Image 1 (cartoon, rainbow, N blue to C red):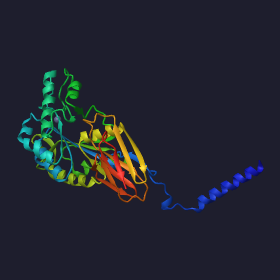
Image 2: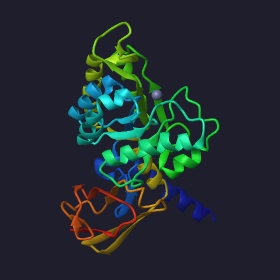
Image 3: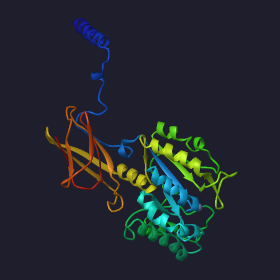
Image 4: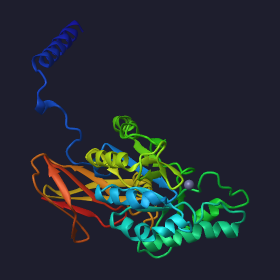
Length: 345
Ligand SMILES: [Zn+2]
């Protein structure tokens, strides 16, 4: 017994002295993932956080300045429009054509922003706006999900709102749980760039959604700046914000509400599997429980293979997928519920 004990002490001494002698080197630091693992990135492009920008009421300044500035800076906003309003009609081509050139997300703020007193009127307010949005997207009716916001101060008391939203594939941004933490802020009129940007470091630190809700965009820097009757931020301040937001795209995934919502929903119901055939051929199987017709946002997949992999092909259904590879870490985007994705050295 004593002998065993002494041996044990001796062995543990050897081990602890080994640890002491070996100062940690780069090579000994464990890899973030073991060889041959696969995962879905929290945010698209494996970005650290997400950024989401709302614009309500299809104001004149949003069309004339907002859409164009966002297009120019390769930013995506979610524009809650009222297609039955004079504002919207005045800039119909910007809303329905220019916005789509920059892949802006049109969203439903109802036809007239007046609420509805019965189901028939509500069906028109929500359904007609949905049809206009699908048409602008170049899609068939009922082809895709649409973000929805009923509008402040409107009444829908005698209406089965949920059934109508469901019918038109509308997702209510207020009552729906998007599925990840969000730091959201309604930008007050007259805000300067530093104020508009104040929440992004927190979103970045906690890997959250950074959401800003804008109102008008004003041509003149008044006190407060006004966009045809709507409290606004001055266009020059908005430009400074947009320039900074474009820079932040290196860290944030910027997308519309529906894109972000779909990504989270698909990821949370996804299963993913890495299959190895031999040392030169792997495959990834990716599925989600969501309806593939509506939940078709590509997820970012990260596969860790042996570090000596320097180049490979990634292919699905005979089509090459764009990918990056570094020290065996392969990254690409793929839509769930498709064919197997093959990775070949
Ligand atoms: Zn509104």
